[in-house]
Image (tube, rainbow, N blue to C red):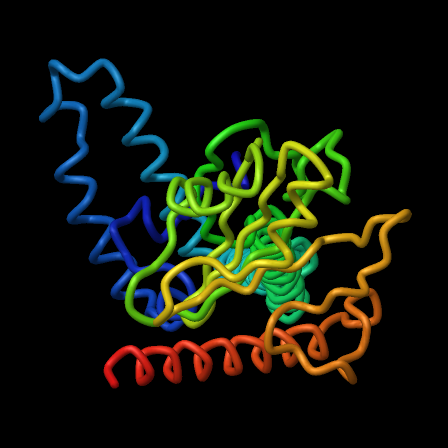
Length: 298
C-alpha cells in the first residue's frame, strides 16, 4: 500500500499528533460511519465505489492493529519533522536570498556621497567657465570701444587716422587756440579769418568744454609765418596763433604781440608747459583788448 496515504484522513479523523491520541473506540466509530457512507450498495452509479470501500477497510485494519498503528504514527512524526526542517531551510534560504539581493542592490546602487561630490564639482566648473566668459566679454568691450573725441568736420582735405594731415608740410601748419568765452569759432570762420594772410588748405577743429583749438594748413610757409605775427579774431575772445613746427630756415625771432622776451622757445614747450604758455598769452591778449576798448570809450 502507498505509504503516502494518511489512514486517519481516510476514516475522516484528524491526523498528526491529534490522531495519535485517538482511542480504539473513536477509530471504530469513525470506521462504521464512513462504511455506511461509502458502501458500494449505496453507490451503484460510482465505478470507484468498491475501490474506495477497500481503502477504507485497509486503513481501519492498520489503525486497529496496535503495532501497525504505532509504526504509522512514527512515520507521520518523521514526515512532520522533515516538513518542519524543510520549512526552516526554505525560510533560511529565502532569507539568504533576500540578504544577497539586498547586498547586490547596495553594491550597484550609486554612492550618495560620491554623487553629491561629482555634482558639486560639475557646478563649480560650469560657474568658473561662466565667470571667464563674462570677463572675456567685458575685456573685449574695453579694447574695442573707441575713445570719444568731438571733432568738427574739416573744411577741406582729408584727415589721416592719427588726427594729423597726411602728406602735409608741418611748417605750413598752425595751431590756433581760444577760450570758450562768448562767440565760438567754426572751421569756416577760422578759414575766413586766416585767408587774409594767404590761402587756407584745410581746417580741423578739436573742441573741449573750456578751450577750443584747431590745426590749420596754410597754402604756403610764408602765409603761416605771417599769420603767427598777427592777432586776429574777436577782441573779446582773441585767437592764439602758433606754428606747429618752426621753419628750418627762419628763426622764430619775432615774438607775437604782448609776449615777453624771456618766454621759453615753443619747441621746448610740451604737455602742461605748453598749455600754461597758451594760458599766459591769452590772458595778455585779453588784457590788451580790454585796454583798447577803454581807450576807444574815452
